[in-house]
Image (cartoon, rainbow, N blue to C red; front, top):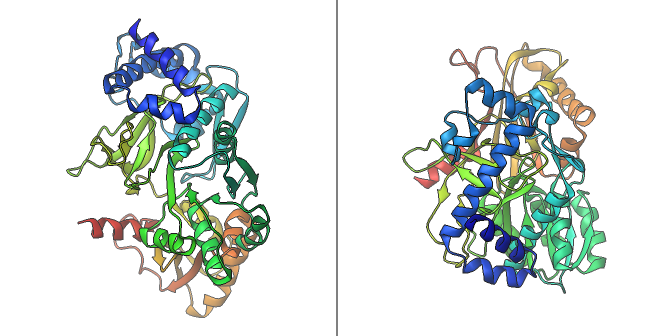
Length: 446
């Protein structure tokens, strides 16, 4: 009974104007949020067990009686993975009628993960996003231009859903070359810009050369950014750059930075967050359960992102707890200026290239403000270096239009580094993709 009352109050609050929602949520007692989470978790778990083919069969196979489960941790070693989504297909997870779908290639496999949603879910996430953007200072009189890629990607829809409640002017440019954006966007006099971090860095380089205009803030998502690059962007525009954290599977925002920019304030009203196994610093893989999804709920979904849950209050005073900035990935998928890349991408770049051995390794590092991808290969003859490099670039252009577009925009550099046979493999296994940016951050944090 109490949980139902809390839920009715929460829904009423989210349907208020953003400024009123913020005031009410900030005075909400922590026990009310926890009570709401548990009630929504139980309902979501039972919906999945009844209506989803995947969850129904998995729970039966494992002998899990969902009527006895009150907390995600009571599911033991049961998790949902990205591989489950690819292997079984989105249809096996459906519990209701879908209105729309999105895809993600953020994986070590070339097969995308498909995720389905309802219009109600889109509107609910839009209201939550509007509250977050209002806290950052977005108002009705502001003028927004978005450069988020619209191809199968969820971010433009999440943004659009939020802006409809803030009622501010909005232009959707799509992920066009930064130079074209620079020339065309100025006519709309925007004071807020949205885009991917590497794209924002390139736009800022152009603005430094050609002149920036006044901005209230910039907002980026889809990949990480170094603090050095963030400071450079902010120096050009004289405005803060905020980041969000999310996945297509979560329908965008799991958390967003506040003015402190020290972790992402997480959406505990819509998700149940866990880090079941952590190291001595409290870092582990983030696992989340969706709480308000009626079309394709996900139970204990493994994000493959290594982070920690921050329980201490934020100096900004916001009620929502935080997720620390992602430290690493559990797999070999890397998010960088090239895009979301895994071993399969480089295998495809090298497929059919004459004189290249079976062993190769891609190293991602940061050089100044730009990501650099070094593709180390073993050649039959060093004289083949030029031919191999030309072939790799040709394959990049022909086989990966999005990655080639990012290269043309100078969002990253691609270098082919040849070597002799046998020099890459020191043991039985060869790690194909190495993100030295993560290693540098871990070393610096010590």
